[in-house]
Amino acid sequence: MSVNLIFKIAAVGILVSVLSQVLKHSGREEQAFLTSLAGLLLVLFWILPYVYELFATMKQLFTL
Image 1 (cartoon, rainbow, N blue to C red):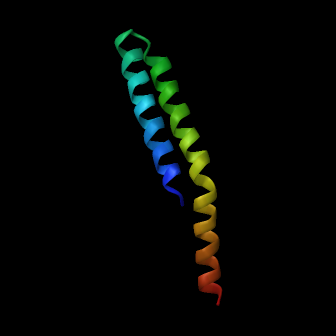
Image 2 (cartoon, rainbow, N blue to C red):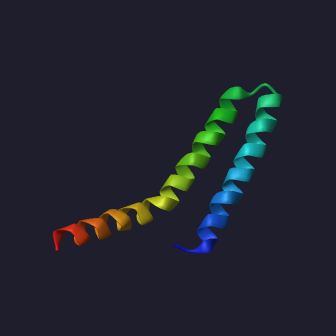
């Protein structure tokens, strides 16, 4: 796993939190929720290959 992925996740987290706060203070709670959900899904799609690799490695480890 590269350090760039960690920085991307941190950047998305900061951006989503700022957008969410701005939207909540302007009275758009639904858009703030959808922004948070979109940020979560984006990060999950980035991490999904690493989780798959982890499970494949564990399966290979225990089948020997």
